[in-house]
Image (tube, rainbow, N blue to C red):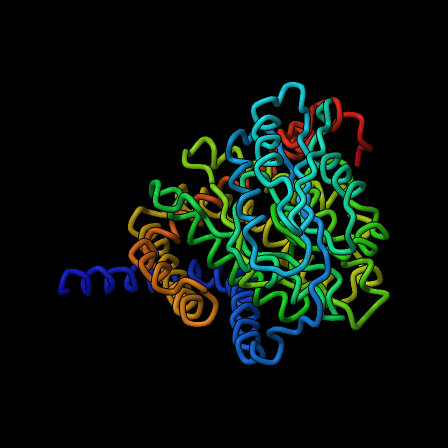
Length: 439
């Protein structure tokens, strides 16, 4: 304890010798990070206060169509279909596994055929296989499923995702409320016990995604309806143009839905906090970095290339415009580059004692905010609080993980600018992405 106090005293002594250095970071924290933190936290409190009022609003159990995008999942597609058939929902769930590139993707195709035969004749759970013999990528898979869907509510899911058995009931309850154009579902990490890397991503999905989206949606500024799990009114989805070419089709569709809802001020995009899907995340450093290079590079492409002309208050409304500009462009595109540049400058210019002192002070600041967020998450958001609270032991490492991910984001921005990396995505064949409109 005494050694810790001496260490902290040394930190404050080093910072006090050059207080201007610490003050250079304060505008970043106050203008960008703190407002988002407060928006999410107040949104969570508001969501909690209205839970009983906005709970089960369902009057009917309409038929729904679930589009499963399949490519390379193999036997895992059976788990996805199993968890959809087993849903506690009285209405019909039409299950549409769309097999992209079924000729070369025989393993997944055969597994989906076996699942179709397994559930043949099961009441209200028809499994209709949609093989796409030539591979066209994720967007064409989703649109093929949309063209085959029979019902007015469409849910899109990934072929490697499983679900709690009340998922459909929960998300349809929310989507049936008149104010919602579309609704996102929550994703949790299925393989979180595998290693340290998957545990860090589990915390990220819990705090940044499930909790963060709950808070943002409450204030009407949901940042994204995940491509792995979203629910839509079919007529609105078709009016918005369905899914569009290139990568980051989920963020692209979310942007177009935000522009669409500007004409309907009483409408919004929702987030079903307790409609739970489970997915596996990368368990190697290489796999995680490659995923984030794709995710983060797509942000620059979407915001500053494809939707550059649509990024206006007139099309988005002032609330969503300011949120997308600050937390889509500034925080996700510009801030990582500034953080990287500042870190390099700091290491080159200042002695190690000052660098360590500043980094420690920043670490403690972010750790304090994360601890408060974790308490709010387990207390108000989590549907599995006893399991999730065991993750608290890993929180001290989480700020380091976030810092490293920002470094990856910074590299991905440069990669997208120099190499147009969104055209090298594994989400579609190169000939599909190359033939799409260039922005």
